[in-house]
Length: 128
Image 1 (cartoon, rainbow, N blue to C red):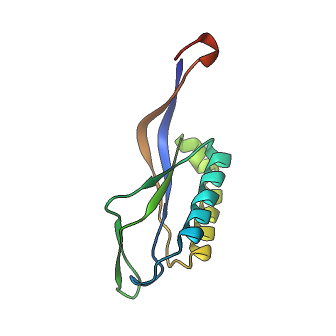
Image 2: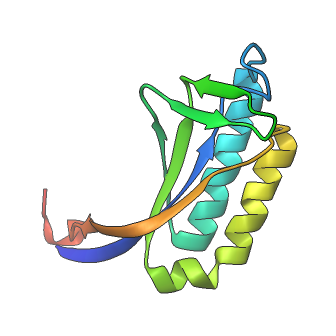
């Protein structure tokens, strides 16, 4: 086995609401966007994981409206800061696509230092 350090995490928040509290996005449109984000992060960083955010998040829109979104999903990928900076424009483009496809006022991209790692098993050596 060996350890691959992932000292930086990159995430994009996928909402479940439109621009109004009563405007719920359909499961089909959300799942399509989550899959798009997963695929793009896999291409850029080698993998990604979707995570539900209990109990959700809160945002204040530019008009002052406060939305509490109880069903946000975070698509997260481990990488290095250098790789994130290398692909930052592509991540910005992905966030723009999410915003356009889901008609969002804003889309949160999170990027921060981490002590994460990937444990890679040597399965050809019989490690179980």
